[in-house]
Image (cartoon, rainbow, N blue to C red; front, side):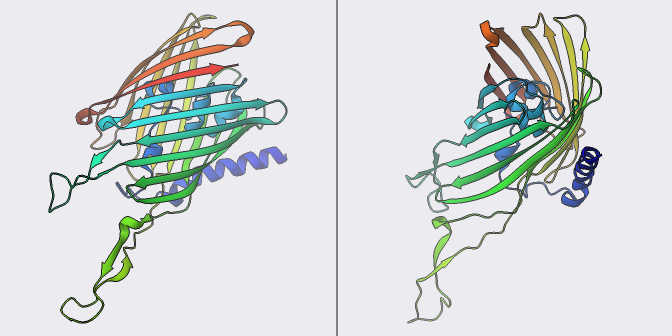
Length: 339
Protein backbone atom coordinates (compact mmCIF):
# COMPACT_ATOMS: atom_id res chain seq x y z
CA UNK A 1 0.00 0.00 0.00
CA UNK A 2 2.81 2.40 0.90
CA UNK A 3 4.57 1.65 -2.41
CA UNK A 4 1.41 2.45 -4.37
CA UNK A 5 1.07 5.79 -2.59
CA UNK A 6 4.71 6.73 -3.37
CA UNK A 7 4.35 5.69 -7.01
CA UNK A 8 1.07 7.57 -7.43
CA UNK A 9 2.53 10.74 -5.90
CA UNK A 10 5.57 10.52 -8.19
CA UNK A 11 3.41 10.14 -11.29
CA UNK A 12 1.19 13.06 -10.29
CA UNK A 13 4.28 15.24 -9.76
CA UNK A 14 5.71 14.44 -13.19
CA UNK A 15 2.38 14.95 -14.96
CA UNK A 16 1.68 18.25 -13.21
CA UNK A 17 5.15 19.78 -13.60
CA UNK A 18 4.81 20.89 -17.23
CA UNK A 19 1.86 23.18 -16.44
CA UNK A 20 3.71 24.72 -13.53
CA UNK A 21 7.14 25.33 -15.07
CA UNK A 22 6.33 25.61 -18.79
CA UNK A 23 3.66 28.32 -19.04
CA UNK A 24 4.60 29.34 -22.62
CA UNK A 25 7.30 29.11 -25.27
CA UNK A 26 10.28 31.35 -24.50
CA UNK A 27 12.78 30.58 -27.23
CA UNK A 28 16.32 31.72 -26.45
CA UNK A 29 15.75 32.55 -22.78
CA UNK A 30 17.62 29.75 -21.02
CA UNK A 31 21.25 29.21 -20.06
CA UNK A 32 23.24 25.98 -20.25
CA UNK A 33 22.25 25.09 -23.81
CA UNK A 34 24.92 22.38 -23.90
CA UNK A 35 22.75 20.39 -21.47
CA UNK A 36 20.37 19.73 -24.38
CA UNK A 37 22.98 17.90 -26.51
CA UNK A 38 22.19 14.18 -26.46
CA UNK A 39 25.30 12.10 -25.63
CA UNK A 40 24.19 8.58 -26.52
CA UNK A 41 24.96 7.57 -30.10
CA UNK A 42 22.36 4.84 -29.84
CA UNK A 43 19.55 7.14 -28.72
CA UNK A 44 20.67 9.96 -31.03
CA UNK A 45 20.44 7.61 -34.04
CA UNK A 46 16.90 6.69 -32.91
CA UNK A 47 15.70 10.28 -33.17
CA UNK A 48 16.65 10.98 -29.51
CA UNK A 49 13.52 9.15 -28.36
CA UNK A 50 15.03 7.91 -25.10
CA UNK A 51 12.62 8.37 -22.18
CA UNK A 52 11.60 4.69 -22.20
CA UNK A 53 14.95 3.19 -23.28
CA UNK A 54 17.32 1.39 -20.92
CA UNK A 55 20.20 -1.10 -21.01
CA UNK A 56 23.12 1.34 -21.34
CA UNK A 57 24.67 3.81 -18.93
CA UNK A 58 23.99 6.93 -21.04
CA UNK A 59 20.24 6.27 -20.97
CA UNK A 60 20.40 8.14 -17.67
CA UNK A 61 20.63 11.36 -19.72
CA UNK A 62 17.05 10.93 -20.95
CA UNK A 63 15.55 9.24 -17.90
CA UNK A 64 17.36 8.52 -14.61
CA UNK A 65 14.87 5.71 -14.01
CA UNK A 66 16.77 3.67 -16.61
CA UNK A 67 19.50 3.31 -13.97
CA UNK A 68 17.34 0.91 -12.00
CA UNK A 69 17.08 -1.47 -14.97
CA UNK A 70 20.81 -1.85 -15.68
CA UNK A 71 21.80 -5.42 -14.81
CA UNK A 72 25.61 -5.04 -14.73
CA UNK A 73 28.34 -2.44 -14.39
CA UNK A 74 28.63 -0.25 -17.47
CA UNK A 75 30.84 2.62 -18.66
CA UNK A 76 30.55 4.77 -21.79
CA UNK A 77 32.46 7.55 -23.52
CA UNK A 78 31.06 9.70 -26.35
CA UNK A 79 32.96 12.00 -28.67
CA UNK A 80 30.79 14.40 -30.63
CA UNK A 81 32.06 16.79 -33.31
CA UNK A 82 29.34 19.33 -32.69
CA UNK A 83 28.20 22.19 -34.90
CA UNK A 84 30.71 24.91 -35.91
CA UNK A 85 33.65 22.63 -34.97
CA UNK A 86 32.70 22.73 -31.29
CA UNK A 87 34.02 19.76 -29.32
CA UNK A 88 31.64 17.85 -27.04
CA UNK A 89 32.66 14.93 -24.80
CA UNK A 90 30.60 12.83 -22.40
CA UNK A 91 31.54 10.04 -20.00
CA UNK A 92 29.36 8.02 -17.64
CA UNK A 93 29.86 4.99 -15.41
CA UNK A 94 27.26 2.91 -13.57
CA UNK A 95 28.02 0.73 -10.57
CA UNK A 96 25.51 -1.94 -9.58
CA UNK A 97 25.25 -2.83 -5.88
CA UNK A 98 23.03 -5.82 -5.17
CA UNK A 99 20.22 -5.10 -2.77
CA UNK A 100 20.88 -1.35 -2.78
CA UNK A 101 20.48 -0.08 -6.34
CA UNK A 102 22.60 1.39 -9.10
CA UNK A 103 24.81 4.47 -8.82
CA UNK A 104 26.02 6.65 -11.69
CA UNK A 105 28.67 9.29 -12.18
CA UNK A 106 28.66 11.36 -15.38
CA UNK A 107 30.76 14.18 -16.82
CA UNK A 108 29.93 16.47 -19.75
CA UNK A 109 32.23 19.02 -21.37
CA UNK A 110 31.99 21.43 -24.30
CA UNK A 111 34.73 23.63 -25.74
CA UNK A 112 34.42 26.18 -28.54
CA UNK A 113 38.15 26.44 -29.17
CA UNK A 114 39.89 29.81 -29.48
CA UNK A 115 37.91 32.68 -31.02
CA UNK A 116 39.29 36.07 -32.08
CA UNK A 117 38.22 39.02 -29.95
CA UNK A 118 36.67 41.64 -32.24
CA UNK A 119 35.36 45.09 -31.34
CA UNK A 120 33.63 47.92 -33.19
CA UNK A 121 36.92 49.81 -33.36
CA UNK A 122 38.93 46.69 -34.30
CA UNK A 123 36.61 44.47 -36.40
CA UNK A 124 39.55 42.41 -37.70
CA UNK A 125 40.60 41.45 -34.19
CA UNK A 126 42.45 42.89 -31.22
CA UNK A 127 45.06 40.15 -31.13
CA UNK A 128 43.37 38.57 -28.10
CA UNK A 129 41.47 35.32 -28.13
CA UNK A 130 38.70 33.92 -25.94
CA UNK A 131 36.84 30.64 -25.61
CA UNK A 132 33.55 29.28 -24.35
CA UNK A 133 33.80 26.26 -22.04
CA UNK A 134 30.99 24.38 -20.34
CA UNK A 135 31.01 21.37 -18.07
CA UNK A 136 28.65 19.45 -15.81
CA UNK A 137 29.32 16.77 -13.22
CA UNK A 138 26.44 14.61 -12.04
CA UNK A 139 25.79 11.84 -9.56
CA UNK A 140 22.74 9.62 -9.82
CA UNK A 141 20.87 6.78 -8.15
CA UNK A 142 18.30 4.43 -9.64
CA UNK A 143 16.39 1.47 -8.22
CA UNK A 144 13.47 -0.86 -8.87
CA UNK A 145 10.29 0.03 -6.98
CA UNK A 146 8.74 -3.26 -8.13
CA UNK A 147 9.75 -5.87 -10.68
CA UNK A 148 8.32 -3.59 -13.42
CA UNK A 149 8.62 -0.04 -12.06
CA UNK A 150 11.93 1.82 -11.77
CA UNK A 151 12.74 5.32 -10.53
CA UNK A 152 15.86 7.45 -10.51
CA UNK A 153 17.34 10.85 -9.82
CA UNK A 154 20.52 12.71 -10.91
CA UNK A 155 21.93 15.91 -9.39
CA UNK A 156 24.26 17.97 -11.61
CA UNK A 157 26.74 20.72 -10.84
CA UNK A 158 26.94 22.98 -13.91
CA UNK A 159 29.48 25.63 -14.95
CA UNK A 160 29.60 27.91 -18.00
CA UNK A 161 32.51 30.23 -18.81
CA UNK A 162 32.75 32.89 -21.53
CA UNK A 163 36.20 34.51 -21.51
CA UNK A 164 36.56 35.92 -17.96
CA UNK A 165 32.89 35.62 -16.92
CA UNK A 166 31.10 32.54 -15.69
CA UNK A 167 28.07 31.15 -13.94
CA UNK A 168 27.42 28.02 -11.95
CA UNK A 169 24.48 26.23 -10.40
CA UNK A 170 22.78 22.95 -9.64
CA UNK A 171 20.01 21.15 -11.49
CA UNK A 172 18.17 17.89 -10.96
CA UNK A 173 16.91 15.19 -13.34
CA UNK A 174 14.34 12.64 -12.22
CA UNK A 175 12.02 10.14 -13.84
CA UNK A 176 10.10 6.90 -13.76
CA UNK A 177 9.67 3.90 -16.08
CA UNK A 178 7.01 1.22 -16.14
CA UNK A 179 7.32 -2.01 -18.10
CA UNK A 180 3.80 -3.17 -18.92
CA UNK A 181 4.76 -6.83 -19.30
CA UNK A 182 8.06 -8.61 -18.76
CA UNK A 183 10.44 -7.90 -21.67
CA UNK A 184 7.57 -6.04 -23.34
CA UNK A 185 6.48 -2.44 -23.93
CA UNK A 186 7.85 0.21 -21.57
CA UNK A 187 6.57 3.70 -20.88
CA UNK A 188 8.67 6.44 -19.30
CA UNK A 189 8.47 10.03 -18.12
CA UNK A 190 11.21 12.35 -16.92
CA UNK A 191 12.14 15.94 -16.13
CA UNK A 192 15.66 17.19 -16.96
CA UNK A 193 17.60 20.23 -15.73
CA UNK A 194 15.13 21.37 -13.08
CA UNK A 195 16.80 23.86 -10.74
CA UNK A 196 17.13 27.46 -9.52
CA UNK A 197 17.97 30.38 -11.81
CA UNK A 198 21.57 31.51 -12.27
CA UNK A 199 23.40 34.55 -13.70
CA UNK A 200 26.84 35.50 -15.04
CA UNK A 201 29.50 37.37 -13.12
CA UNK A 202 33.20 38.05 -13.61
CA UNK A 203 35.72 40.74 -14.50
CA UNK A 204 34.37 41.16 -18.04
CA UNK A 205 31.43 42.91 -16.39
CA UNK A 206 33.59 45.45 -14.54
CA UNK A 207 33.76 49.05 -15.78
CA UNK A 208 34.74 52.55 -14.76
CA UNK A 209 31.71 54.78 -14.31
CA UNK A 210 31.36 58.55 -14.66
CA UNK A 211 28.17 59.73 -12.95
CA UNK A 212 28.11 63.00 -14.90
CA UNK A 213 30.34 63.15 -18.02
CA UNK A 214 29.53 66.87 -18.44
CA UNK A 215 30.86 67.77 -15.00
CA UNK A 216 34.62 68.29 -14.65
CA UNK A 217 36.56 67.75 -11.47
CA UNK A 218 34.53 64.82 -10.15
CA UNK A 219 35.69 61.20 -10.03
CA UNK A 220 35.20 59.77 -13.51
CA UNK A 221 36.73 56.39 -12.64
CA UNK A 222 34.23 55.01 -10.14
CA UNK A 223 34.48 51.20 -10.02
CA UNK A 224 31.21 49.64 -11.16
CA UNK A 225 29.83 46.40 -12.51
CA UNK A 226 27.12 45.45 -14.99
CA UNK A 227 24.31 43.44 -13.42
CA UNK A 228 23.09 40.46 -15.47
CA UNK A 229 19.64 38.92 -15.21
CA UNK A 230 19.12 35.42 -13.87
CA UNK A 231 17.84 32.76 -16.23
CA UNK A 232 16.66 29.18 -15.87
CA UNK A 233 18.29 26.02 -17.17
CA UNK A 234 16.76 24.35 -20.27
CA UNK A 235 14.20 22.28 -18.40
CA UNK A 236 12.69 19.48 -20.49
CA UNK A 237 9.71 17.23 -19.81
CA UNK A 238 9.70 13.94 -21.71
CA UNK A 239 7.10 11.20 -21.91
CA UNK A 240 7.26 8.25 -24.28
CA UNK A 241 7.23 4.53 -24.94
CA UNK A 242 9.42 1.76 -26.33
CA UNK A 243 7.86 -1.25 -28.04
CA UNK A 244 9.99 -4.35 -28.78
CA UNK A 245 9.12 -6.86 -31.51
CA UNK A 246 11.06 -10.13 -31.27
CA UNK A 247 11.52 -12.09 -34.49
CA UNK A 248 13.64 -14.84 -32.97
CA UNK A 249 16.23 -15.28 -30.21
CA UNK A 250 18.85 -13.16 -31.98
CA UNK A 251 16.86 -10.64 -34.04
CA UNK A 252 14.40 -7.95 -32.96
CA UNK A 253 12.97 -4.54 -33.76
CA UNK A 254 12.60 -1.78 -31.14
CA UNK A 255 10.30 1.17 -31.84
CA UNK A 256 10.46 4.27 -29.61
CA UNK A 257 8.71 7.62 -29.49
CA UNK A 258 8.86 10.64 -27.18
CA UNK A 259 6.75 13.74 -26.71
CA UNK A 260 8.99 16.67 -25.71
CA UNK A 261 7.94 19.79 -23.78
CA UNK A 262 10.88 22.21 -23.16
CA UNK A 263 10.68 25.50 -21.30
CA UNK A 264 12.45 27.41 -24.10
CA UNK A 265 10.67 26.18 -27.22
CA UNK A 266 7.47 24.61 -28.50
CA UNK A 267 6.49 20.96 -28.16
CA UNK A 268 7.72 18.33 -30.60
CA UNK A 269 7.83 14.57 -31.13
CA UNK A 270 10.84 12.28 -31.57
CA UNK A 271 10.52 8.84 -33.16
CA UNK A 272 13.01 6.11 -33.97
CA UNK A 273 13.72 2.45 -34.40
CA UNK A 274 16.49 -0.09 -33.86
CA UNK A 275 16.85 -3.31 -35.85
CA UNK A 276 19.05 -5.82 -34.03
CA UNK A 277 20.58 -8.65 -36.05
CA UNK A 278 22.33 -11.79 -34.78
CA UNK A 279 22.60 -10.22 -31.29
CA UNK A 280 25.72 -8.33 -32.39
CA UNK A 281 24.73 -5.77 -35.03
CA UNK A 282 22.24 -2.93 -34.90
CA UNK A 283 20.88 -0.55 -37.53
CA UNK A 284 19.06 2.58 -36.36
CA UNK A 285 17.06 5.44 -37.83
CA UNK A 286 14.78 8.15 -36.56
CA UNK A 287 13.45 11.66 -36.86
CA UNK A 288 13.57 14.33 -34.18
CA UNK A 289 11.54 17.48 -33.58
CA UNK A 290 8.51 16.45 -35.60
CA UNK A 291 5.85 19.22 -35.65
CA UNK A 292 8.35 21.81 -34.36
CA UNK A 293 8.05 25.10 -36.22
CA UNK A 294 11.26 26.36 -37.88
CA UNK A 295 13.12 23.15 -37.04
CA UNK A 296 16.47 22.58 -38.75
CA UNK A 297 16.89 19.05 -40.02
CA UNK A 298 15.56 16.06 -38.15
CA UNK A 299 16.72 12.84 -39.84
CA UNK A 300 19.02 10.61 -37.78
CA UNK A 301 20.87 7.42 -38.78
CA UNK A 302 23.31 5.09 -37.06
CA UNK A 303 24.65 1.63 -36.40
CA UNK A 304 26.23 -0.39 -33.62
CA UNK A 305 28.39 -3.45 -33.00
CA UNK A 306 28.31 -5.50 -29.80
CA UNK A 307 31.25 -7.83 -29.04
CA UNK A 308 31.04 -10.19 -26.07
CA UNK A 309 34.14 -11.73 -24.53
CA UNK A 310 34.55 -14.27 -21.73
CA UNK A 311 33.08 -13.69 -18.27
CA UNK A 312 30.29 -11.45 -19.64
CA UNK A 313 32.77 -8.75 -20.64
CA UNK A 314 31.21 -6.69 -23.46
CA UNK A 315 32.53 -3.95 -25.72
CA UNK A 316 30.15 -1.91 -27.85
CA UNK A 317 30.75 0.62 -30.62
CA UNK A 318 27.96 2.94 -31.71
CA UNK A 319 27.81 5.68 -34.33
CA UNK A 320 25.14 8.31 -35.03
CA UNK A 321 24.68 10.89 -37.77
CA UNK A 322 22.21 13.75 -37.29
CA UNK A 323 20.99 16.26 -39.85
CA UNK A 324 20.79 19.91 -38.73
CA UNK A 325 19.74 21.53 -42.01
CA UNK A 326 21.60 24.75 -42.79
CA UNK A 327 23.68 24.17 -39.65
CA UNK A 328 25.21 21.10 -41.35
CA UNK A 329 25.43 17.82 -39.40
CA UNK A 330 26.73 16.22 -36.24
CA UNK A 331 28.61 12.93 -35.85
CA UNK A 332 28.75 10.98 -32.58
CA UNK A 333 30.86 7.97 -31.65
CA UNK A 334 30.27 6.06 -28.42
CA UNK A 335 32.50 3.36 -26.92
CA UNK A 336 30.98 1.23 -24.17
CA UNK A 337 32.33 -1.38 -21.80
CA UNK A 338 30.07 -3.67 -19.77
CA UNK A 339 31.18 -6.12 -17.11
